[in-house]
Length: 198
Image: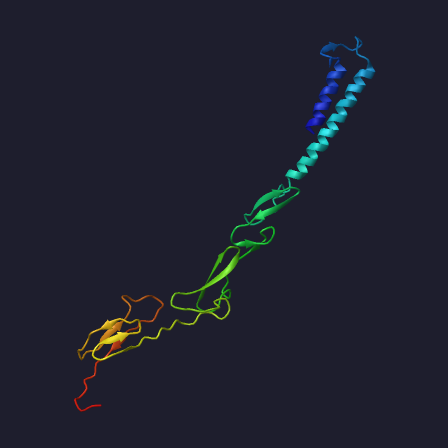
């Protein structure tokens, strides 16, 4: 379009009688032949067509992203005559067309869903464990607590307690209650043995 306007401008100048040939100006009928003017116009038209073709080819090459093919906030990256999309973390597809969202059934029981790295991820909630939080879910984590000894207690984690009273002894309990988790305590009770007891 710009080249056509330029060509039209040149033609108007030529028709007004001002043409530069060999750094000298001539007026119509004063040393410039119609053949010479036509030759200049034809050369300019050829140059304009060639430039227009080149601009169009370059335009096609640099406009692979012109139509904004990447959806949902994806950014377009031109790659020659093609493109690729840099998609947000919660989308997938070649044009970021699929929005990934956690739903009620995205994870198994007692598992928490979150979206990262273009996929749904499931992790067990605090206090639960499981090898397959996606399908099987996460059962309550159970840790066996045992202790033995007389007159000292040795717990499952090899800690020793030297308690010999007759009141129950609290071996373990949480420092404070955690919402959503049952309260617990592990208590030891000493029993007096009679001398004749076996």
